[in-house]
Length: 485
Image (cartoon, rainbow, N blue to C red; front, side, top):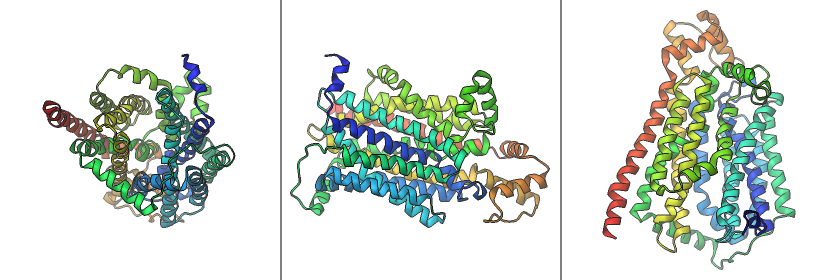
């Protein structure tokens, strides 16, 4: 059978589901890729002026909740129906994105983002289940490959549009863009989505939830699975720094105008496409490279690691991501950030599919779906720990404003405290004036004297510890189980 013949075997619901995945990811990553910048940005440029700690708590805890909620929302979808849940999810997401763009108080922003997370948690299991139910043993491999591609296409387009739109029209347009993307999905589900056949449960919702939790607990009683999931928390903690911390690091410490000039010498068109009007490159345009590289090279990398055992593939992939994350943070050079993200994406492409494959392989026969249902647990905990590192640790070690305030205190300089009428940018300007430096000199002085890049050692150390644990796990846990078999 020809490769193209497989595409004809997919029903309409499959293509509608994948299109909705693209637009949902467009909305999510369109916001998430710039969220750290928006939360901590200076008020006079449209940001909210929150501290790094506040940013870390908000992003980490809410995203962790998002990945835990499918425990409940998956059972809810099976009970109520996929189409109804999708309509509810899109109404929540659309109104949530719009609302988040209207509020500025920390508690209200937190509540709005949590509201969005509820909508996303309703959406996630339904779309995955739709793809599962609209593919067969013959088409599932290509089907989920298309699905993964849609995730990354949405993750690529969303931040690019956010970057260009916010430069032209301000921060509020980012939320309107996300709302519009969800509105497209609402139209799709109302007029084009046909719910696939499913077994309708006769149990009460409470009974269904209790049964689901019992099954999760049953899976976690397997020491092999539980130890593996605990170890993988380290990977996700390191991995998430790409979205939580790197945007702030680029904005505060990387002189992107140098990279813009280099790119302009090669191709003025590319420089214009990736750059801003003032001759710099926005942080989110670096972050979007990860999805771009995955779209281009996933098949090639998957082919290269195909013959590796799943655990060997995971370890290899994590080792590569360690190098990538280190390169991204270790210098103040934008070119190293680009190289670092490329290396990071290679590691991600090698390890992520192997992670899914491995969980399926250690599952007892007939319990594959149950074991796969636990795979979100390390993602949730990883986001929670990422929030702490991106918030508390980054603020103490690498936050430009915090380090400048420390230097100002050392010199005994008096500068008005930051408020709604005296912004972060006002503080930078006043400090530079009193210290006799322009903003570029001020940044270079702080970078040289406070070494904010040292945070890379913590992120990479977490990755190294994860690899060591996986190696010991393979030798002493899996090895012993294999010996007994």
